[in-house]
Image (tube, rainbow, N blue to C red):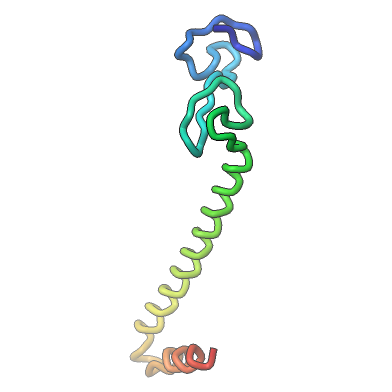
Length: 101
């Protein structure tokens, strides 16, 4: 098999060109079908870039949600530690604020 970029002869099982390191095999992120051309899947028709950008967006939203959850948990733990000093005033404020919202 020849590399499409530099025309170097490479083995059929190679994933990358040994000379120019161009990708020779592409795997569909949705159905895991292997093919020689990138862009869109020959089997299921998924556009690789659109699929990956949507997956990145989903992971970003999940990470932001987890960050907010961890911030909330951290604030709550601080208030429990400060309870002997503040008498739980901030915890009571938060409790009443949640009921109003």
